[in-house]
Image 1 (tube, rainbow, N blue to C red):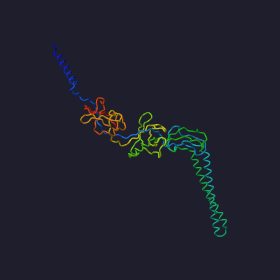
Image 2: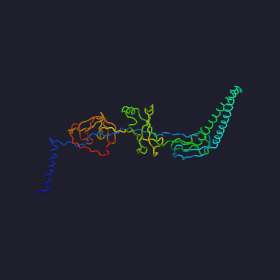
Image 3: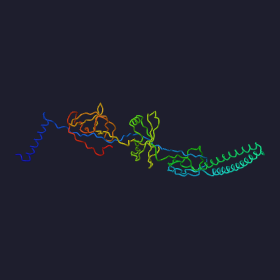
Image 4: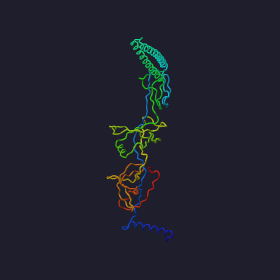
Length: 374
């Protein structure tokens, strides 16, 4: 005899067999396959284009000597940053101080000669008016007075040049920047025809130059985007994102015939001196105002010979094929340009269990915060 527990187990097993038989019977209806669906939604998407760029110094100056002389001192450490008007080099001053004193003496002499010429002219003119001096004497006095005036101007110009030459013995930084290697040592003789004494590079801000295809520029112009409507962001060689945004300043007026690109330059702050002249960086041009675009998970996209499509689920839970036009990928999501509307449901898991026209049992996918694309 069967005990009560064994009898209950036997009845339960028999019931399961009966249900399985009913499901396999010709007249039985299998349950609809279960799938995971995602609702098509609008997302805030900032238009973004990526390029490869090169950091360039906005200002790079080769410092040269403007006069001849021996280098007397150097006022900076190689590779250090200097301020505008800081003395970088001094040349031997004694020859130019002597030249200045000589020019001052020459001007004083010329002014004394001018006073004499002026007095002679005044006296001769008065005598000529009385008829006691000839007109030739007056002409001679007039000529000497003009020569004296010219000599004063000449000596005054010489004095100005002497002062300039003396000031050029102090070679100052024309801007804030970082110094390179000094070409000459203290004690060497330099002149305006010598090689540059050093190169000075402005450190903040910097330019980033990057080539943009003509096709991209044409699309930007058609959309009415301007330099003020985008920001420029950089990716450094170590893969990190640079924490300063830049602005587009200008683009070249002509295209590169070899690459059909136009060079665009953006100005980037460089307060921490992370950007170095001629450095290669990744460049992203991002719209300031995001646009609203339909997006779905990339898992929903299927491909065949006709292109991209999705399996959509109708309000009656029937499966149908929808041909779609897709755009850029943003992480796990992809932009849908056509073929779907907001609120449509698409299958993102369980494709292999369904075919167009059948009824399914959908379960809504709840995306995590990490999947949201801003």
